Length: 141
Ligand code: ZN
Image 1 (spheres, protein in one colour):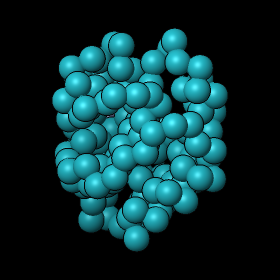
Image 2 (image 1 turned 30 degrees about the vertical axis):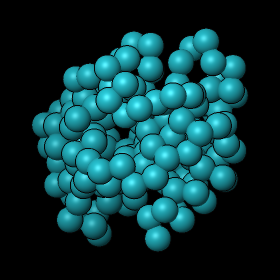
Image 3 (image 1 turned 135 degrees about the vertical axis):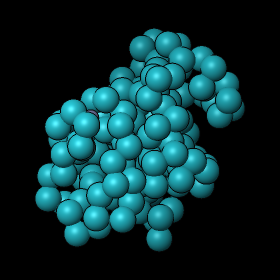
């Protein structure tokens, strides 16, 4: 029974495995826990999503980065492919430089896959939605 952070209010919800695919709602605010798109992470919500038990895949990006813009719709499609087994989030490295620094982001786009707060893999460079999904599933076994 993994914990999942709400994309709207960041409340941590415990969701039975059997209910993950049934459109679970947040117990605090009622929002859908999975909305078919990446969550925009901020310093206020990053730790909640990071420490939830569901794996977290973060796209570290910036508005000035051409390859990041190319990858954005691919990452969005990958969210639909990987939810509800993985939470996808986007972290604007210009808006949240401390978080980027803490995770040693040297080039963007960089994706990091976290499990229960621990980094288990990272990948730099733009990827297609199918490659993002395959890479993530491969890391999670
Ligand atoms: Zn909520």
